[in-house]
Amino acid sequence: MFRHVVLLRWVDGAAPEAVDAVLEGLAGLPAAIPELRSYVFGPDAGVNEGNFDLAIVADFGSVEDYLVYRDHPAHQALIAERIAPILAGRAAVQCELPR
Amino acid sequence: MFRHVVLLRWVDGAAPEAVDAVLEGLAGLPAAIPELRSYVFGPDAGVNEGNFDLAIVADFGSVEDYLVYRDHPAHQALIAERIAPILAGRAAVQCELPR
Image 1 (cartoon, each protein chain N blue to C red):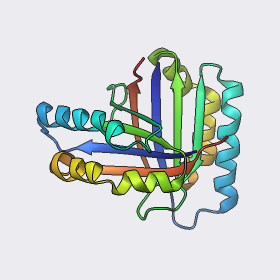
Image 2: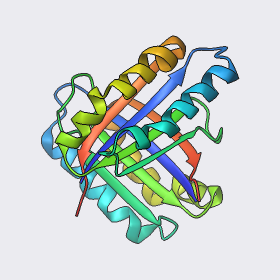
Image 3: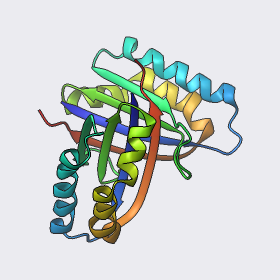
Image 4: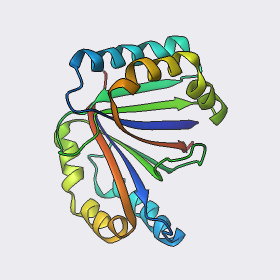
């Protein structure tokens, strides 16, 4: 199993509607990309100062399946049309999952 | 369920032994902190440029249990003694998990 973890930070003053549009788009990806075995995302709960704004944890059967997701047109369209316009920061790691 | 996601970046030239000491320390935390229901961490696989170096995904039964972990002496000692000396960057989100 192979995991992709990404944290996103929005620009100051990002419209709630724009953030909701990202969440709605993410929710549609598993139906479009069957390589996604597990797709869990959620907005920061506001417990700590200085956090990023959204966490996404995606699990795949292999690194090749992750690459299908990474480069999939539905994913790339979501990034270009909804994420990029409000994106202020991004941090990512891909790692093997223990069996 | 409540999730804590953190990505860490090491300083350039961090010694492999220092990184291994962090991984060894993390592996010991679930035995010390029973509030940790799931604790998955792994070094970046090197698939993409610009990534952080380590992902940690920790799941708890509640935000209160997360706070026990956050402030636990065993966790704080690991941060102070092994993580802080090689830390170049940190990104974190805590979020509610869907049921």
